[in-house]
Image (cartoon, rainbow, N blue to C red; front, side):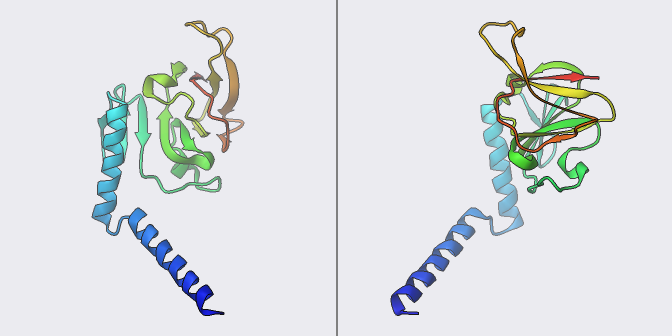
Length: 174
């Protein structure tokens, strides 16, 4: 290896280490502070929630929960780490990653109410009965007669690990 190539290699490794240290908090306290800043920022842009623990926000008296700081789940993760029993969950990233929103109510709900319209990239159903349709609002005005079902999850198909973020509404069939 010549000296220029060796120098470039060392420089690239040093830059990688510096970037990793700048992105990854050095201590658990720094990680907690970073997570809290994310939660505070989310609350500033999505008002009406209440922080109920170190990682969760509750909206509408617990009807809708947003979870932060989850480790990457991936499609092979245990069911309960993806979505707790008794809920259907949806995620801002493919393969059950990113922020997690969870609902359990029956009937039609507008995801825009919580700022989650056009945000769902994957979803998981962890209830013992029923199914949920993820719908895209088509047309203008308040009519939902032309809404289209983007995908459905339920007891026969639990998960959708990669979808296009076009769902505006959900309709849970209990």
